[in-house]
Length: 498
Image (tube, rainbow, N blue to C red; front, side, top):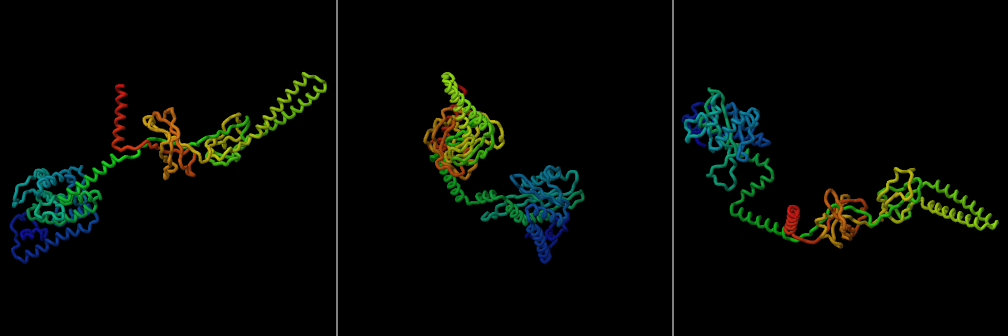
């Protein structure tokens, strides 16, 4: 440590004569002053080491400097992206850059930062080089006092040249108010520079500890030695180019498709056999039924009465026919015989309807449509649809393919199906039929492609929906993008000029 700096570092007795030669001529007194100076610097550093965050350390730094050298105001700001940010002021004063006093202090700090040197106003008598202090003059123009700025340096990297000046990491600004304020001399500035040198490593470590992982990786990359750095860059660039070329030129499956839904392979509609009333519904949509299982019952009272009426009428016609035979009335015999045959036919029809008022499942199936649980007792018309059944284990998948891609879809092509209800399973498809007619869905034309599930799982059932893809061949991504772009340009050309 320079012996000339021992006196200002020794204590807070600095005054306006601080620019004068040192009064510590006795070696013993000089050693004591140096020890006291080191002690104060270590006290400042120790206050920062115990901080939990970078901002807390900055706050302790400004408070400690204001206490040791009796400043009216101390502030520190840190260099980020070429600008000073994160202003911390003593006394807990706000550091919002929108405040006029903070903007004024930032201007003073930037003035010192641009010159890469400590700047004080009034100028020290022993100043080696003239400095620009326009912002400091404006700050002190009306209120007087003294102000000084010193630089915080970045910690030295491993292997860096110690003789080269370090890059600044921030600026410390100290100030005394009033025209009678004690002047900040060169020795006091030297004390502040030493304090900044002791504080910089601690502040740098705390700031780096709070950095993101991305920032650390970028810093590590930038710190690599030049030749090795260039070789690694070339290797990474080559690997990236190779990976990109492989991705763009390697043949990959070319798939087309869109929304898909599951339907039964065939569907059976159960209708009301006769006009009547709904008595009981034993199933609902989604139920799985076995062949012969009772599904629906219709009220039978009206048909029973009709059967009794027709049976009684048949007996009357038989009696009339016997009487006509006894009288040998040939014409009457023919009439009564015709009436009797008609009554027997109607009776057979009613009997058939009675046998069909209980609807049974024709095969193992899933109920697809027909919720009759809310229609008990409701009147039914003859032939009215009641239930729709689909056979269990036999399904078809309808995939909606855009009209631009339908010409490349053919029977026998494979594909995949992903259902919203079974996201963990991908089902294999085989195209069985391509619809020749387009339908309009949400303003675009699509064709329905019928496909069969190769190995249907037990959870599959009609009504499920998802996304279906049909593999129409293989092509590289670059070729595919080029073909899609060319097709888009051709369509645009055709729309504009025909």
